[in-house]
Image (cartoon, rainbow, N blue to C red; front, side):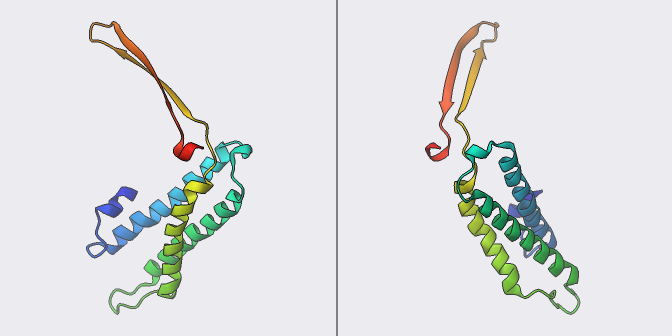
Length: 139
C-alpha cells in the first residue's frame, strides 16, 4: 500500500495519499527497529540507539498528528483539526531528515556472498559463479 503514495495524488484523494504515507512511516520504522533487534550489538554504531529513539518519536509523532487531524477535520466547514499545521509539518520534515541519517546509523552488516549455478536446457552445468558484493560505503 505504501507504493500507492506515488500513484494517489494528494489533490485527488487526500485520505488515500496520507494513509499510504503514514503506513510507510510506521512500518518503515518497525522494519528499522527489527534490523537493530536481529543484529549483534557489536555491529551497532555509536549513538545509533539514541537515533533509534529519536526516529521513533518523530515517526509516532507524525502518525499521531495525521490521525488526529483526519479525525477532527470537518469537510463541510473546512475546519482543520486541533493540531497547528507547523507541528505536523515539523514532524513531517523531521522524518525526512531522519531518512538521511538512518543509513549512517543502521547496524553494520557483513558482506553478502552469493553463489550462482547455471544449468543449460540439456541439464549440463554451464559454470559456477561466485560474487562478493561489498556492503554500502565499505562497511
